[in-house]
Length: 240
Image (tube, rainbow, N blue to C red; front, side):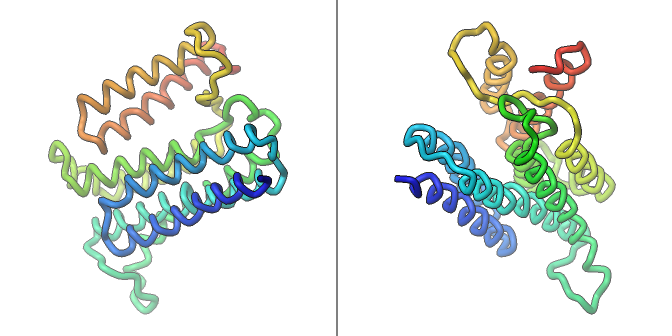
């Protein structure tokens, strides 16, 4: 019984590895399904641990280690893929320095690992987050990738501009380790009062998924998520 939540966490890690294989083999359209499974496992392991009363320190650490793969290495690999696509590079070659540019995408992986390490020892993040969480970052980057691959609304070439890609790597690296309070989706009760921001985001997310192409919708949802958190922060409600 103790190992059931840990088994679910390991499925998250394996899913992250499969996502990396999908990226490096160019089979991009498998990614949404694989990452959906990773998200489900990431949610389910904690839920099952609470139901079975089998929460443990090793489970906490294992959860972050799995997240480093699925929500740290994967978005870094996506940026690696996009930068190479922008430059017309098909493979990384040590003897060809011009192929190194794509590796800058893994800066995001480094900051994701730092963010997860901070999360494990930060007692302020029991109810909400300080800094953007790694799954949200990964969802935005996935949306960016799908928009490029499907050329949604003709934005493919626009979003492949190197200054934009490098700017997004820098922005999300900062958001991951920032001190900005970001609300979580933990619901202690189903009433509107006290959960206004969560329900508003949920409503806007549903509207986005219906009205927009899937990749653009993912980017829009995460952007709204961050903007609502910033709004709450700057009107003095840092305890979301």
